[in-house]
Image (cartoon, rainbow, N blue to C red; front, side):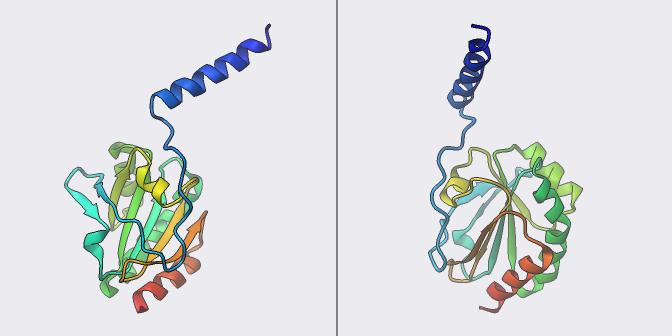
Length: 171
């Protein structure tokens, strides 16, 4: 009976987490190359408005799904800040999407790395699920026509990210 109690405790904790809405649900398959990017409107972490992917049609867009607790996300952030600033004059729009966290964590992350782009909140994971996000970070490169050019889960180095940004900026 002693061995059953820890198992029952684990089951009870998992059930209460699910009941409390802590699970984002099952992620869809990631978008395929040349597929239309799932549209969304998300609140900005600063509390001043929203950001809509549909409104960005005509611009190359780079989505970076992250969370403040994610070590690879923290490792990538300084490079992302530099690349976003370098490619902004060429029309690139970068959106950081904080997955399953609140505004406090997202703003802290943004300030820590001086991110020169908007950070949106996907607090319940709905948009991440539509993009097939099941682990962090996730990188999505979208062309001016709103089509996914490249999708990459996991950490990327600055040179890889820059190569994909250049591809969507040139299109």
